[in-house]
Image (tube, rainbow, N blue to C red):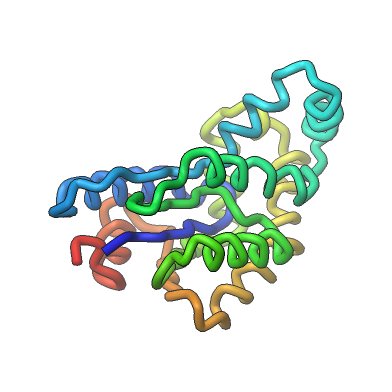
Length: 199
């Protein structure tokens, strides 16, 4: 069985941590030892805005001003990874995409194109206050300003929540909602209980 998983949730909810635990579990239990393509858009974006192309400079200015990057750039990042790196026998994990309804629809079109079967969406549900506290405490450069943190949380409410509802109501996906305001171990256990990735 090939696994296709989309992690989604507020900034700071632990998507990367849970995705890493999931990768390790798949690697341990997959009898065929198939590789995993991990699509983490945040690091690719950070690398992109550090370069000196015209597009990168425009994107960097948006980032410095605390703005939201346009959907077409986000789609370009993960679509480029799929086009260049996805093979028919790879597991696939998204972390950090989609961030909007239009991007969610684009991911659906990509998964249909690649004939990915039974994709799962794992929504790590945390409150806005919980997310705010986590972002401010972890000390990343783009998390040090309360105004920037609030902008990111506003984007989630305005742009990402509609994407989550889209996934929740789309029969293509297995939608799994987990309380993210628990210990790392408990969140991971709840994910496994909802969908056994070893199967």
